[in-house]
Image 1 (cartoon, rainbow, N blue to C red):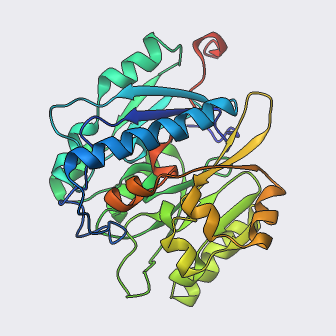
Image 2 (cartoon, rainbow, N blue to C red; image 1 turned 90 degrees about the vertical axis):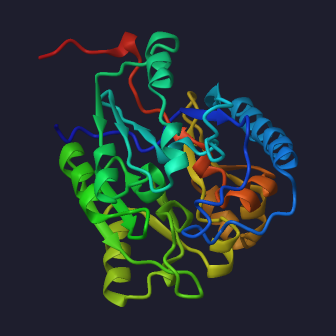
Amino acid sequence: MNKNKESQLASAVLMIRPVRFQSNPITAESNRFQGKISATPEQQQAAAARQFESIAAELSAQGIRVICFDDTPEPHTPDAIFPNNWVSFHADGTVVLYPMLAVNRRTERRMDIIDSLADKYGFDVRRVIDLTQHENDGHYLEGTGSMVLDRSNRIAYACLSPRTHLDALGDFAQQMDYEVVAFDAVDRDGAAIYHTNVLMNVGEALAVICDEAVRDSQQREAVLKSLAQTGHEVLPLTMRQLESFAGNMLELKTPSGASLMAMSEKARKSLSAAQIRTIEKYARIVSSPIDDIERSAGGSVRCMLAEIHLPSVRLRRAPP
């Protein structure tokens, strides 16, 4: 694989409309962002459905191409609203499938969705890299939850956790020709942060990170140095802001070239005026309230978006 420059920002996203959304007891042990829920599964689904439609409509109104697929009632996949954990799409036509910790999340992986993106929506799928065999060894890598990708510079940032293992990470890096910046990150109680994308986001020229969660000074310095070397302005977050999902934002680009920063209303409200001004130097903030999704499932807006970087079939180049 060559190192041709890839755009950092996508203009299209895959979203999965919830059908039987609810807090997943199997993931609670490794995801301390999940809250205690008193609502019934039916109430959780109804709230998630409303909030899903709100953020999907807001992104569409801003010019992002939002491609939605309905989840399936069976098998029950309570976290299917977070597709970025099982799949990623790349500008050379590659689709990557990922190994996942929770057994009831593995059936979220759906080849019919990938086929439909090619057959119905005109994206060019040239190869599928399947990393799911790592599940047999108890090694996991939950997509762009486990990794925050700097696609332009081919760097994968990853905090290690029960859901992010070096063996699977190394396999991804080798097959996709990425450099890895791996580190440990913990919450205020010293527990491993389950996904890198709740800790940080890398945009086109702005990187957001709760660097105080990286307690090892050498690791923290290595992450910040890598971000500086790639020309990113670094916006630090506090631990309180991390807990409000401020790290779980995603920069997107409209077809007209305008940059948007998608996040939840909770995340936006946690930011200071100065932090908002910094973000707005680079992108217009788009936010929507998804409090019930965040509380039930322990994930936020970025987790709901699988960026589609695949080329369109009409743009496919003839092989050299």
